Length: 173
Image (cartoon, rainbow, N blue to C red):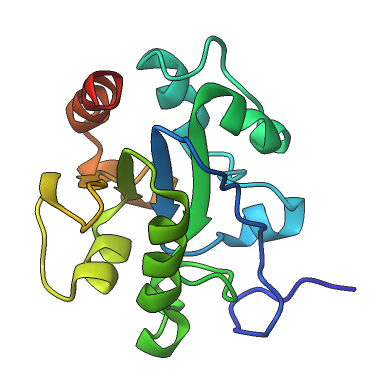
């Protein structure tokens, strides 16, 4: 089966990496085209995700994108706001987003922190513009946090400080 990019279809582009007891769940907008082709999260050549996880101490070494299934061993989970879409953020439509499904996942697995990898996913979830940093907590206690996107397309907005802050927060909750 070929994975479509730039279009929605019923098959999730990447599997959720979720289980109870996680400190963090990182939520992106959608699988990028390179990630969908590779079948691995944050696989684009310019993506900083794996490097920043290591630099902030969330993983003991820099993992390769194909090693994403190992993340729960480090207390980390992954999902996307638009599970059935692959491609750049510019092509994502409101109909691709599923904030109700994300809410159900977070209520089920109850991570300490739901961290959005970029403002777009956070806006789709909370329904209004957001800044970087901590937002309110969800019922049940999961803290919401907005991070600069690790995508190479967002390099002009890159700031590692919020990533360091969320790592420290996750160690304290």
